[in-house]
Image (cartoon, rainbow, N blue to C red; front, top):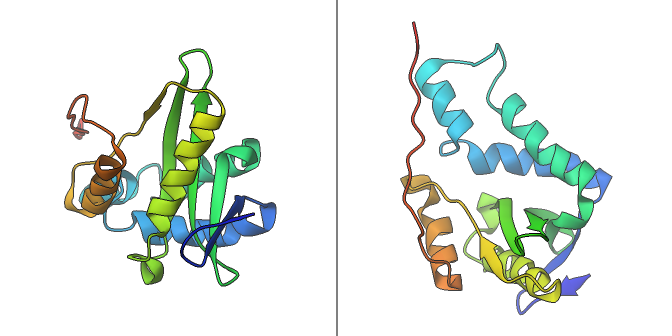
Length: 165
């Protein structure tokens, strides 16, 4: 386990973290995530609430690539997580789903998570890091975090959706 200048500790995800991580996904994506926003505009898709579409993506990362999901603890409580992927052929590390408990935001936890992920990329000899971030107001803090870390915009894009009936 690793500690930073704050009292946050980072470690690899464990199966017993999954209920808490699911709660963090619900808090982190509600009000700003694509699946949540689509549901607000168009109702449930496929007869399931948005969390039932988002959670399996995060859960799969935790179960299939636990070495690529970090959990942040503050005084023994799981308060955040950060997932990532590695493309060894292109030598790119990809920052994935990540969030911090709203009650613990502003304490540098997201910055600590990102710094550790970037350190892992460097330790594995990768040449580049990439991240995709939405441009809506709910992602402004994340966008700022990535820019401060040195990420540069390659292209701005839009997620577009339309009903066909």
